[in-house]
Amino acid sequence: MKILITGDSHTGALSHGLLELRTAGQTNSAVDIQIRPLGGGHILPTPFFRDVGSHAEIVDEDYRKLFAFLPPKGMKVDVIGLSMPLWPMRVVHQLVWGGLSLAERLPNRQPISTSVFRQFVLQDQRYVLKLVELLSRAGITVLAISGPGLFRDHHVLREMRAEHVLKVFDAYRAVISEELRRRNIPVIDIPAKCLDDDGFMFGAFRHDDIKDSHHANGAFGALMIQSLQNWANTQA
Image (cartoon, rainbow, N blue to C red; front, side, top):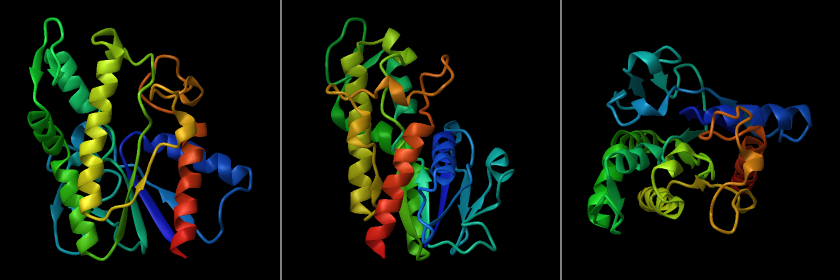
């Protein structure tokens, strides 16, 4: 089985994890995994591709520097794993910096309803969901590969109560998870061992750069790749 993983900056942890597993001889020879990032996630809410029927033509100039089509022309793939749908921070930032809160009155914040919040989420993932539908229609098995959870030292927690930020983070993931289920898209989700009892990511999986409270490390990436290999084994 040939699997291509592409998407946002969280593909970095997956690349490090895949290398660690290969170095340790813990990869499955029957599962060929390649990771080719598209670029920064800030572009995902924009029309970054054009539907040309059997492929997505990448039209964003930054993304197009890496490859012009998805799946890339000349590359035969059985599965495409998208590191795109399950990263909530763009909408979390929209609420935090916009003085909003989710269905709860907080000091100096305007609450929004869950239905309005859902529209925020669907607008954020509008083009990613269109890409999922295009690839599925083209006969390619599509997976969603989750980014990490929320780390306790993430910078947004200085602006809003930690438990409320986590509530927004999880609510976003719940909305998108339901959309993926409706489209029959499997999810490689965050392993339970990565989360503490409150639902925050353990610091052991934090990026090695002390200034980066956003991304995970190779240890997290390795667990995700192992989960992906386990899923591939069930398909055989």
